[in-house]
Length: 252
Image (cartoon, rainbow, N blue to C red; front, side, top):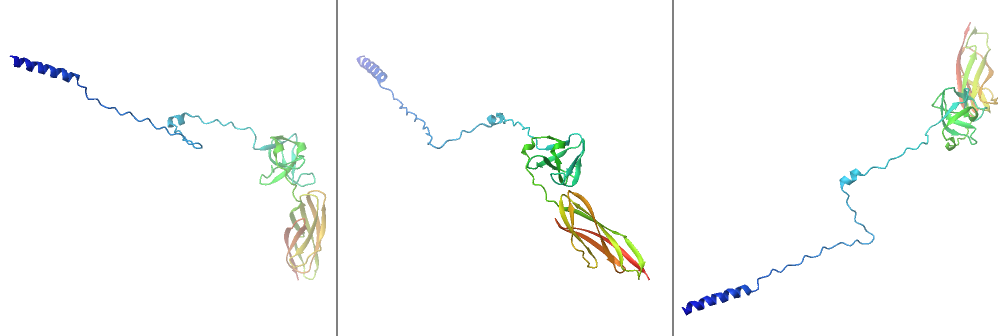
């Protein structure tokens, strides 16, 4: 009986001891602190922008300017001559009629004449007197255009008679050479004629007080039946040539 009592006491002591033993503890390893990159002076890291944000950004609105790109001229109350140069001494090469407009592309130095696209032929240009036209646009910004050089623009030649039939023993005969010379402004035109037979006239002067067309005449002596041509040519202020032909026959 005593032995059983001892065993029971021993078991109780062992049970109480096990309750007082320290339990095993798990050692927690502290998490390392996050490393923060410190920006280096002088450099920057771009921040990405989500595509949704980019799509919601509105583009700036552009406001169109009201500065006209074309300057226009129109007659005040009557048609206006359009001239080769900025002055009434230049030849008339076009006209700006009532109800029409011409594009202004330049001006003379004192803004008394406007350089425009020829309303009679837009592939060319001419000059309108500012006194007789009204304008649309800030023409002060237009470039200054130098007056053009005066020149001969055309020569038309005719022969009288245009055909001749004479007796073969009736030579020499005389024909009249007529030339219509057009110049763009006041100038002295130097001209002469030359025949297909090699005969050349002396040089002659023709004075133009203003632009336009003038007529000159001379005589040519025909010595035999033949087909002839006559050329009239200017050498000053520029070279221009006009030509015509005529026929002479004879009857024995």
